[in-house]
Amino acid sequence: MYRIIVILLLCSNTIFGQAPDSVKIETLPDLFEEFIQINDNGGTVNFKGETAANDVVKLHIRMNREQKTVTGYRIQIFSGNSYDYSIERLQQMKTDFETEFPDIPVYLNYFDPDFKIRAGNFRNRLDCIPMLKRIRRKYPSSYPVKMDIPVSDLIKASHPEPQTPEEDTEVKSIF
Image (cartoon, rainbow, N blue to C red; front, side, top):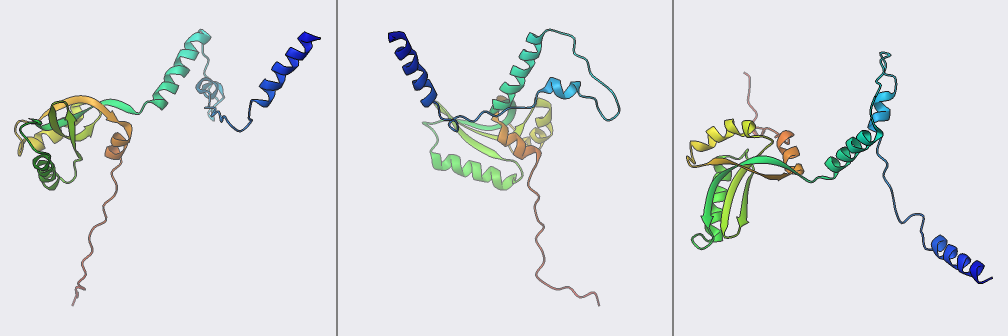
């Protein structure tokens, strides 16, 4: 009798302790199942291998979706000690760069004990070379640095917002 009461109490706690809407599980499409399906052209894909290898690939895909930063490059245009430069002076340097190069995003970061002004968002070193040549005309000591860049910044760099041309307010006569 004692055992039956204990089992009922344990079962009732687990049944009532779970709320059906408290956890939402997002199921992602199975990559391997999509490949196995017959395509429009009648072709098929066959996987020969361990299921553990498939699980590793699925884990890799899931981790890449959760990752918020990517290793990339920015161009460092200035690095200065926090004791020698005031924040106002650094902000002025940043705004000077923004006015000189309005199409390049610029960032002022603090890495103890230095402030660094870095520009651009590039996926690899080769991508930053044309911009580096352009920046070096004004800032000859600039160089590329490897760092973790937020994925959102890379998306903005690859898909810039279209700029609307300013319309003339004057009406020009063709006669």
